[in-house]
Image 1 (cartoon, rainbow, N blue to C red):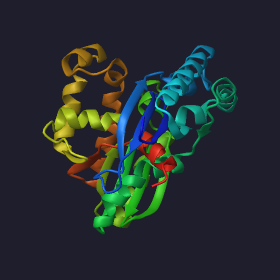
Image 2: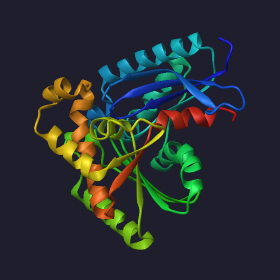
Image 3: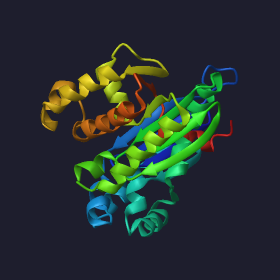
Image 4: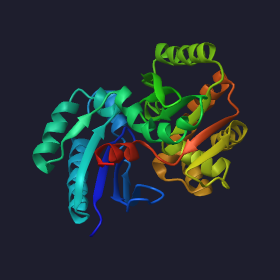
Length: 296
């Protein structure tokens, strides 16, 4: 296929993504370009957060999906790839066992990464592009299905990083503990009182959809979503069932369920920090995974 290709697999609590990028010529505006993105909503968190393990059925589905992703990577002649699993696989008592099974069947070695590594992968590219231009303090908020990662960045330096077991699937399953919720709020308040004004950066699939609904004219590499717009969109979405949201707002079935819990987490952080807007980059964890294996 001429160009070198690199891939990242993001095994999340809601969806499992394969992202393939090609390396551009030196001097290009972007070092990498997306050539393929596949997203399958396996909802591993529904098992992991309720039963404490991945069911036999979803385990089989994950193995089948990894086989398909392996085939796609071979078609694109991928030079290097990395596969990372996050909160659901961290929580599942049979997560390590499933990792071994997938390696045996597909030759894909999955890393179950902790919250700090997840946060580093999500924010590394944006830290370079955004934070290096200013001495402002940024709070990166990544809302996933099982956890929310918070990164505090000043300049190009990651100052603090915390992961909380507060995510959209976990909320829908009624598995967010009150102590965790309180700890999350207390931590954000402490950041606000310690570091003063914080500029919020929101990452993850939900905030990108909320941006499309709340600030449709914003289509750039880095966009701004006013918190007032986010609140208005969340209030409107709340009036409908997930099925109605699919039809009215053209959302995928799994997104229609998790988008309101995600909006509530972003709104809570914005309220505590008194932020008026959320910066929304178009890149996510899968991009960070690809970047980590590409020899730039």
